[in-house]
Image (cartoon, rainbow over all chains, first blue to last red; front, side):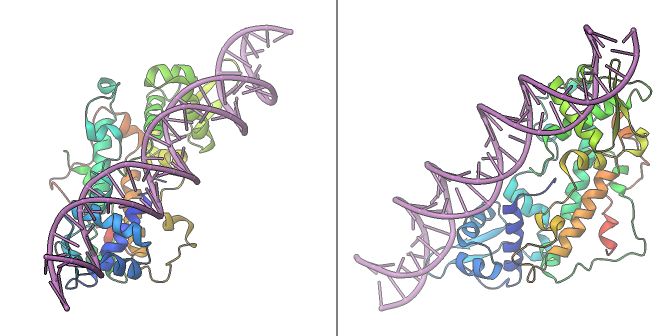
Length: 154
Length: 154
DNA sequence: ATAATCCGCACCAGTTCGGTCCCCTATCGG
DNA sequence: CCGATAGGGGACCGAACTGGTGCGGATTAT
């Protein structure tokens, strides 16, 4: 579990499809065909992505969609936030107040750290990388480097 | 969004409560009182946690629960997996096959990386740390260190 | 035996999610 | 100026999941 919504998964698929042809202005139908996602679903996703500012739309006869910025500057975190709202792994992490045990809750600051780590994990991958056949980042010698994120106090 | 189930949140709360008294054998009612979580819910959680091997139970009069291992060896990832099943951020990441666009899906290997990063983020925090009033790990000078996890190819 | 306690399962209401449809608005071409 | 094409904003529905409750049964100390 702990999974993203299926729509979000489709969303990244559509976005990578878009990323493969940065110059073109593809309409919803065409995107559906290329991404193998049902057309109505693609249409719905694109509306949300436009609202989120990740893609821009052109209306009218030869209208369609294209990425709002370069594929290297759009991260998976951006897509997720656009489709599911702000990333917050716990309920109390986002709205702050309202928790009944607010005072006695020692775990909260720790959850925020985990939250931040997850967010960074999603921010570390760009659309350009997703579109490439295989992930090929800096490649460091160490195999399983611990998360230094937790070292930084917020 | 991208949040863990509310039950999982409660679960960690119960676990940290348990971690504060490693020697004692606390029953469900007592745990409910200490963790400020509704008693029936606590009972349900504990059953799952026992099945997951994170806590051990003693039946009969004066029965109760205690951690199966030291609080430093139990991570948030353990609790999440016990309560929500294996951590897999995308649907295709866990069951492997069945995806209709399996062949044309370039993003899959990238999702697995993200998945791994998230898993590490959750594994990096132990119950002992959650129980402590404030997170206090190694503390490094840098503020926002990038995730090196993505450097390691799987 | 009795009481306390855990165990396993079934059950229910509320919400969320995926998916579809419809009508409106904007733009281009004739 | 008109009509075809395409996006925009909703409403809407069925299915699945989630949180939460309850009950009978098993286990153990007194």
